[in-house]
Length: 319
Image 1 (cartoon, rainbow, N blue to C red):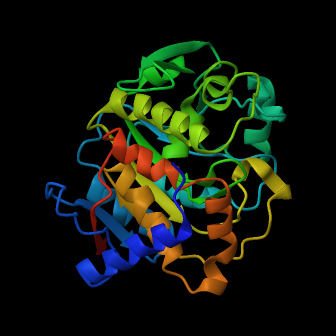
Image 2: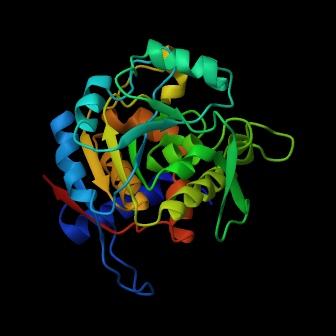
């Protein structure tokens, strides 16, 4: 069900009243009170900021760590800066950037073209594992009403843990792209998995609430696969209404940079990111909020809650 701006803002106002600042809404009388998720926040947009937050959420990560990152279309202007990622990864042992090929028209549709774009964009300081380069694997989706499994890049099975390092921004179809989109679309294989999520009937590029639900189900496949061995960082910087998949065609950002959020809870970190946007003055939030609502983007959050994929009640801890 789509969520209106008025309903969402009402919830955000209640959240502020409940905790005296940014945070999640109080539990309604019929809901059991549960412990809030912890979401860590810094305004320090830098490698040091990333490292400081990572130290608060990395307790479950061990072994070979996949860093799921959107590496961007050729010369994309808004991606997380490469020098930040390079400095950050120097403190994350046995970590590898991971990606998958794409479904839309792009040189990243195939592995050869994808590797050329990686070189163009300067992702040369570390190996990048294009996880579907050698085929797919299927991960089950517990409780999905649209999908029972998701086809992912099979190399995901080579990693013990995953850090989801996300550039939070708008999106032409999803309304916004946070940690959920980064793992759902980002880990789905280019030929099969992304088609499973996008296609509805004969419409390959279906959007609206049903697409949000399929995307959540895809994200659940990844989150359930890693269990307690996955954590999430959202970087709220250069937030165009368009995804990094738009490359140089992305609309210039009109939303101010806000900082970095991190959590071991995927719903909490995306909910907190959206709450920070909605808490901005109207003239600063207008374009991104319009993009989110016109695409039914808030359905990502409500369906995550329905599927038990995280906690929308959170404590915001500023570092």
